[in-house]
Length: 270
Image 1 (spheres, helix red, strand yellow):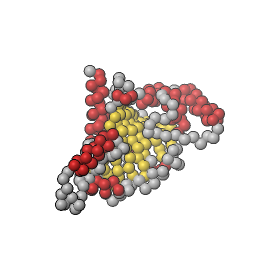
Image 2 (spheres, one colour):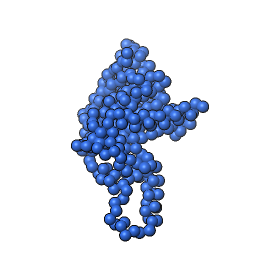
Image 3 (cartoon, rainbow, N blue to C red):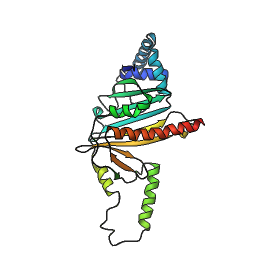
Image 4 (spheres, rainbow, N blue to C red):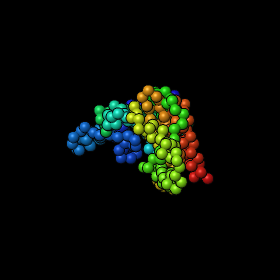
């Protein structure tokens, strides 16, 4: 039977510090309301000593797994109308190590940089995508099946794609109908110009690579919920596209990227 745990914000940070790295893992954030450093360190010591005095070895093993996962899915989401609204934030970390899986959730705090606490639950390591989809607010699929989007200039792939699209447009012979025809991605730009109800990103990442941090395989998806329409998942491409997805569609999109990361992990073991 799977177990679950709940923590205050500082309890989680202290536990993560003890078994893993300094501070909470991405995509989580933490801001203390304890004003003095000495008082903060005393409270951290008190919580650590209390945790170790009543050891929960199942929990400790779970935290160790999450500090060095084989694969992790990091999810963020924000209120599209007020990105700084703390209650509108979504922060999830799904982790898999060997035959064990976990979903960690940061509860919304009073500001975007505060945590209202954390939860952690054991889960099937092959169902990380399902856990992520179920943790997001339930939304119907967007009404459009496939939308071509402009390249994202902030990504390396998008910058390269934009360069070639621009060069192709500049090199073509002028046509009489050029001024009347919309660019192929005009509908995509209109889609991006709509202020979403909420939007976010999903990072699917290899935990450790024998080639070092730069050798890790990392994949990305974005998601957008449009009021009166529904949920879309954005794939980086090229070409960059958006498609309306329901729960199963989102699960399929995440699992496709997980398969790519798992394939890279297996290739390193050959």
